[in-house]
Image 1 (cartoon, helix red, strand yellow):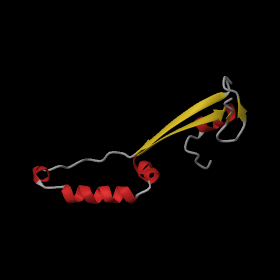
Image 2: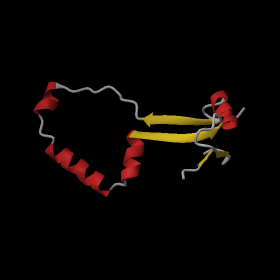
Image 3: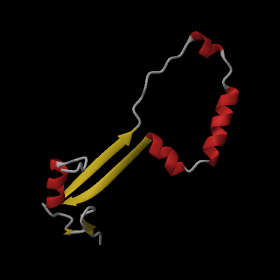
Amino acid sequence: MIRYECDRCGHPLGANDTGRFIVKMEVYAAAGPVDITPADSQRDHTDEIEALVRQLERANPDEIEDQVYRCLRFDLCADCHRDLLRNPLGRKE
């Protein structure tokens, strides 16, 4: 049996509870401008690619992913849902 609880305050929630809200959040890197010149297309990038692959092989996969994209999902009770909508970034009031 799946048990639900508010991921913010821990309040128990029912699977079909009308006071249960699902929050999905996507966080991803903003793409900046890409300046590719004709000289770039003529250059051999093999050494740079090999160095990048070696660096990625030593890195923590979760840390790499966090630098690019992360999708999060939370269950919230009605009170925490209301608080989230009122102050989505959790700024001090």
